[in-house]
Length: 144
Image (cartoon, rainbow, N blue to C red):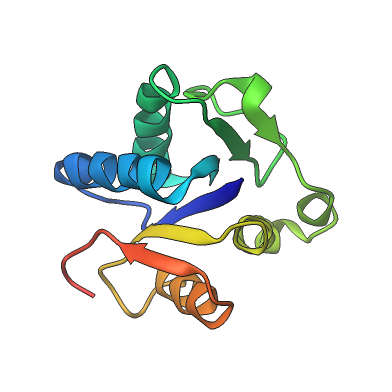
């Protein structure tokens, strides 16, 4: 079973939803991706989770929501039964929790779907890190 992770900017336009849907469905149908890791910070993570939930009724996929922190926000939009809180994230200093979470997801994936439109960002850093590790990288932004 192949795995995919999502990393993108905190803010992303809702207009990318159609392209994200096409990308995810293509990965499921043509690349046998069945496990998807997604974070919980920002609009790209939220959109990716929503798209995955839409496909969950159509395809047999596993959605893993990877937490950076154990506290729960008031506006929890994800199914808590799908969450994991990795040991390496738990042991990290809080200021590095998102870094460790992203490293955890990349380490377990063969594909990265990202929304990166700025080369001066952490999302760009993870995109290049994934490329160096040999992951197939799909940037759904038209800018970078």
